[in-house]
Amino acid sequence: MRYTKFLLIVLLAPLASTVLCGQTGPLNHAKYWQGLSTTARQSYAEGIVDGVNRVWDALLQQNWEFVSGEKGEALRKKVFPMLAPEPITEVMTDLYKDPANQFVQPAAMFYAARDKLLGIDITVALREARAAAIRSHELNQQIRK
Image (cartoon, rainbow, N blue to C red):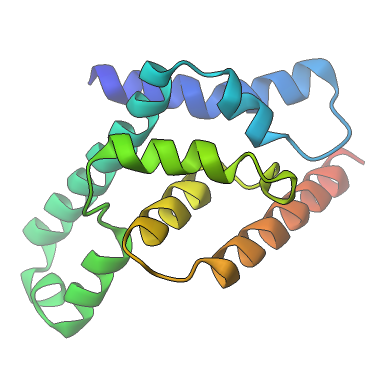
């Protein structure tokens, strides 16, 4: 429960600062991430792990056949961290050093970091995450009009 509350704060703080400060450009997640302590970064990652585990447990209780088959295994490999949070947050920090990644949302960066650690090419994932950040910003701008 403690991690859930912390995760909510970590996820909602950038949104609140955007609204309160009237930010006009995309949210600079790299700047936000770099400003977090190591403990806060690891708590963020642990929150993702906790959330994935909770959703998976709920799926198991509702539809065992779905999560036990080939589709379930493919989904598990896509969403489960499969690594300890510490190395993932370290790679996230490194990836955020690239100015091209400054607007990538932390959840997308989490999975890019995980995939990089697993030896998966993340070029396409980062390109898609960058494009999603711009689309999200444009949508937010349209909503504000």
